Image: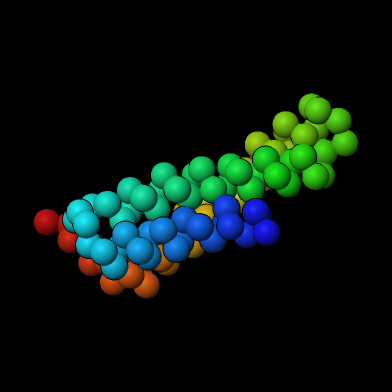
Length: 90
């Protein structure tokens, strides 16, 4: 349950920020920051579950944390899209 909350939380947070339209560039910033923290939390949980000793837990946690961070950031960017965020590069 905590794993899913960490993985899907950044997407929900980014959708809410984009819908609230609090600040023009707050949604992408929230997506990246929350995605990195959520992904690393998922990696730590998986590393502790999969690793057999402390060194293996750290290495597996870091490797899977990077993979989960990319997945969480991607989900959070879809949250920006679902919230109606319009990217303006001018």
